[in-house]
Image 1: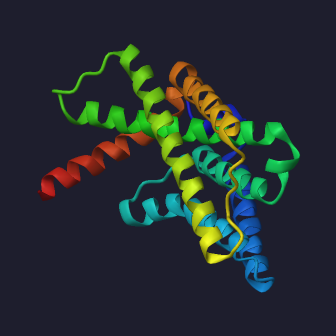
Image 2: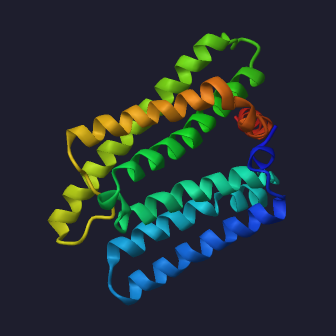
Length: 214
């Protein structure tokens, strides 16, 4: 089963939604540059670059990512960009939703990487219970890195005298972020690994090709 199945949309509808969100991000980049909102332009520009990753994988490696997964990636980065425009401050639940969606994506990538290494080498055999632990640790580790990045971005912005593309709301917010990162990880670990199974063969081929080059 893929994300296209769970969303209940046709592939063309999913692509249209993803393109529409990309267009909106592009509009924010242009608006930020025209109005000299550097943080907005940088934030939206980085998010837009992430949404083109599936296209890069298709062009460089011939891998066509499931349209539903492409849409999930796009939604995750768009939620973050929109949040930085105000919703993070206006609605306490918005940050929780954003972190849960992002954690689902990160957890799925972590699972796919683990399964790719398992399929690649007969020497790697991870028990299913440990996969759950791995997904949790992977997401929490990424969450810690993200929090450090946020602190670094705020600190650098203060030094440069510009608006920060991210906000830090204190220790309580960090704890809440990690809680909902855990929620997203558990959703994937318990129910959602199958939705990322399509990504595993591509990663396995990529690992094998790198081994052959060495």
